Image 1 (tube, rainbow, N blue to C red):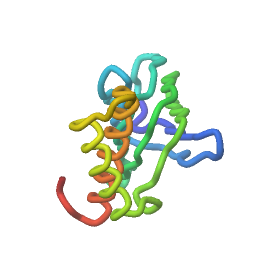
Image 2: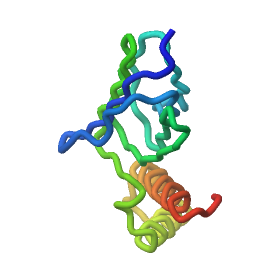
Image 3: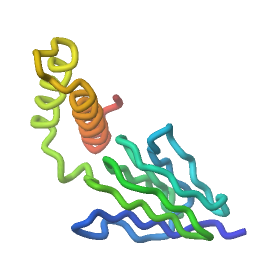
Amino acid sequence: MPDTFLLEIATPEKLLVCEPVTEAQIPAESGYLGILPGHAPLLAELGIGELSYSLATGQRHHLGVHGGWIEVTGNNVRVMAHTAEHPDSIDAARAEAALQRAVDRVHRPQPGIDIARALNALRRAQTRVKITGQRLGNSR
């Protein structure tokens, strides 16, 4: 059995990752998937959360993803995300402010607020803050 598999992460705009990895943790709509080389074929809906993966060198990478699909076939894993963000592309102060707004919307909903949409905004904001904290060396 191979020691790595090819991980591809793409959005409609661009290909973000295309490299051999030793493992990946991917947020599916129904919970996190742990992927190792030789994983069974799979098609799943991508959720909102932190996607992480390890290179053969042991280096770990993190991205925030939101919606799309995960396909596992043979020795390839394709993540087709509606949106995906590297920690370096996220403004930490803006992410913290968005998280506070999202928490306020969920805990003190105003008339006419779509709660499901507010909860999704909260999950996206939590993911951005988490991966930004990892970039800065904080433990969250």
